[in-house]
Length: 138
Image (cartoon, rainbow, N blue to C red; front, side, top):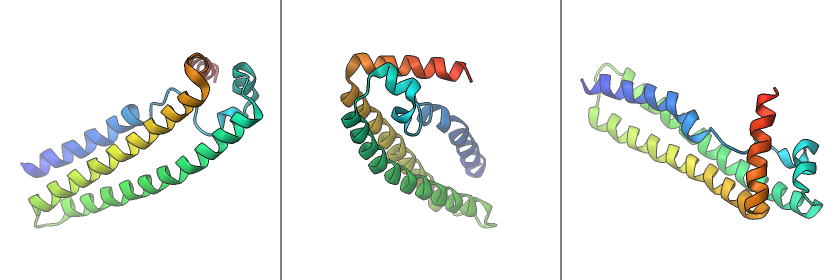
């Protein structure tokens, strides 16, 4: 029974995680280097450099957390696949996996907050609108 519940939780987590964590309201990558965004938001060269630095710092953290999350997921899957299921170990691994997923989400959120601080309220709201419009035009 615990095995079925664990598998169901895993599947649910992987289906819902992208919509919860990855559903960013700001564009991915170095959007401030795309004239559509930078011109509309009047982003200065100094701000572009600050955003470059913020992006570079954040990118490594995210890559490390994603790698860790993938490994923890493989570990949990391996535990579930074993003939003799160790329920306590699997439950503990699931908690570890969720903790890492929360760290990943918090890191993404922190990055968005830093972008928000740099742009200010009005330009951040404008960025979100520009991004929604840009996505609709693809």
